[in-house]
Image 1 (cartoon, helix red, strand yellow):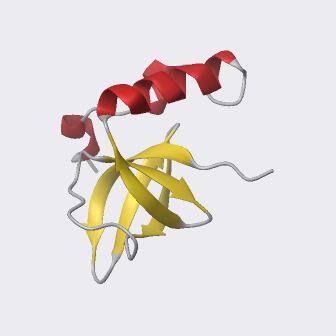
Image 2: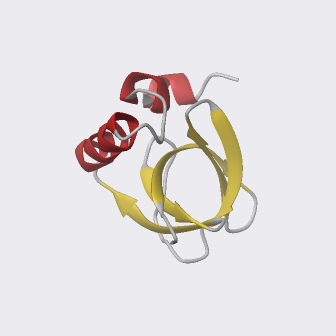
Length: 88
């Protein structure tokens, strides 16, 4: 089974790339499939690619459901606010 999950964009990188954060883990992903992404946006990530931008409320709901299922840390630990995302 494949799973695409919401992640917070914390840094835009050169080319079609960004750094996302989920549960305190940061990973570089490709933005080649999505236009207009900014720091603080949520994107759906699957196998290293952002597939689409996601409404922050939908991202929070999905992360909470995954946390309730025991697949992620509680939602408060999974999502940094955009102001936190800018911190090193």
